[in-house]
Amino acid sequence: MSTPTLTSQTTCSQKSRVRTLGIDPGLDRTGWAVLETDARSNPFFVRAGLIHTSPRDPLPRRLEILHSEISAVVAGHKPQAVAIEAMFFTKRAATVAATIQARGVILLAAQQAGLEIASYDPRRVKITLTGSGAAQKPQMQRMVQLLLRMEFPLSPDDVADAAAIALCHCKTAPYQKLVRAASAAEAAA
Image (cartoon, rainbow, N blue to C red; front, side):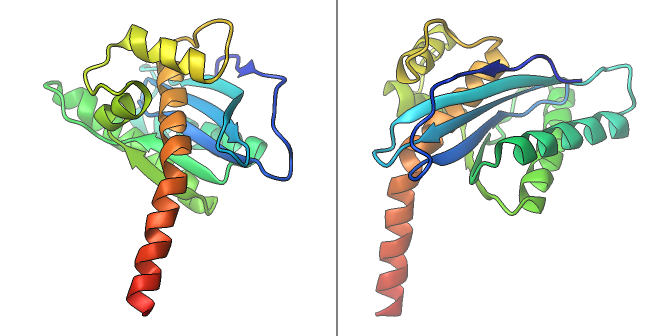
């Protein structure tokens, strides 16, 4: 089940904050991180954690635990958006299948809560945070640490990845909203 979570005392003004829940999905380990942004889109770390399911449990039970834990994170932190890692294919079919199923119950929990959902492929996250789609884990962890003004890097990797996904959303969502509004205005004209 869940491991202890990390918390920050620093939050931005209640009036202008936007909360984003970043998720690095996995059946065995799902990292999550909640960030807030202020009116200038400056990100602030709120809380993060790791959801772990036991391989000894049957698949339906593991998926139920994951759904329940993510639903509890959403209820407890009330994000306006969920940013989740998009699927990419590896050589290990069993890992891909498990991650797809885990991602499905996470998306279901976010949809049931009525949240905005955005997916980002790992390369897009790396480019957004470092300028390079080939950035390695240590570079990504360091950028997350710097952007969130943290004393130490987040760990484990799943949690740091979730924060990176949330940061990517915080940086790109305002632009995406402007593009959608311009497209809607153009279509209405």
